[in-house]
Image (cartoon, rainbow, N blue to C red; front, top):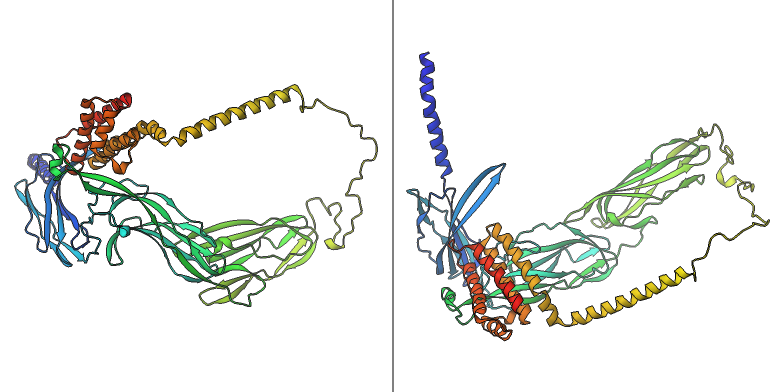
Length: 624
């Protein structure tokens, strides 16, 4: 009894200790540093220090970063705070992030070391890991650029870093087609990689692929879907693989892969005159400008060699390394019974282009259409797998027959020789037809098909007597219903022509088309901004808000996006009869979104910004 009482007294103490330990774990703080692995000398880049805590009761303070030798600090530290929520199986958790951002410029090439930063939280000091960055020499056209990676991959959405402040040079965006080799035999695969290199933040659209004339091509899964840092022609770029192909040349000689092309909307920051108090933060009012740029890839020439002379008679263009297996599904059959002759070719090469080998069967065997089954996959180097050809046949006459070997000839480019594969001889035993209790009508036992004589009983005679044909029903042609249907068709055709002419006239008026679609485009962008707002993606929210506000004005006032400014927006709205109060509110909404995009603050109610933009666009739609 005494032991039980002692244990009963200890249990609450254990519970308190467990709760205390779990509380310590729940208040754990993570402090990390992040920076690019490689930068260019003289080109601005960012480093970030992030403290993550999972309780709002702890607020880090006292952030300290020792001097960085070999680099100049041109901005920072700028502090931002974020909040994340997560729910798994009904259990909710939250975390808070505190980010301190610097913009640096490396002075010279070499190795740049970022020392440990420190913060104080919950009466404890935390330090980040030290960083080492490789600094390479910058190109002549690279001064002033940003080493921040491009914000978005094709067809995906992501969080945007600050756009580049560099002026746009022709070689800032490069599109390249990279072949795995430039000299091959006909039918030998070539891996083609379409890659983009950029020194700016951009969006990509309208990717156009040329017809690979002279090639049979197969799309393959890209080996890399992430942005990488890469040096090209002495300059540092961010590169991304857009597409990969496996191309098989189908003719010899010099084949040219024509240019790929796309439109790159490069985001730049330009300086303008001060328009509001928000411009003070940027030292004169920075504005983001999207510059469209048509980018074309290089043309690639491939030297395709013809197959060596002296190809065997059964060669039909198979190139690679293969194996051959197969034979009849049964070697003993009853007359008038069916079976399959299966051939399976396995290996790697131009499997999709292989045709079924010829099978020589006895004349008393009826062959039917070949069924092909594909079981191969395309990789970065070749197409590997199997291809099966199944030939159904029916043995019509009794006896013992021999199916000679089936030959499959292919060219092996590694050895530059032709290889011939053969199946064994197969002996077929065809017994008596058991399906009809004896011989089928018209079938002579032991006689081959070519020895049979047509007796005439299997062909019916032509009827030569009076067929006694008579008219049944009425003819629709030239009836009342025929003319009614014809008039309806003519009227429908005339109506369709008038409608198409009206649509063509409407679409030729580009100003009217842009004006009509302005609200629709703006609402779609506001919908995208709302999704970012619900996902707590403030940077994405303000970017979409700016696209909606600026894009609406571009369409409504018929001003190209590259020429938009607050002055011409103000003048255009005034010319449309909009009250000065609403004009000022619209300009202030743009200024606030620009401010919050580059200087986020947790004090601004993001929902109020969204509601104000919706109200402004609705008001402008009713006024203009």
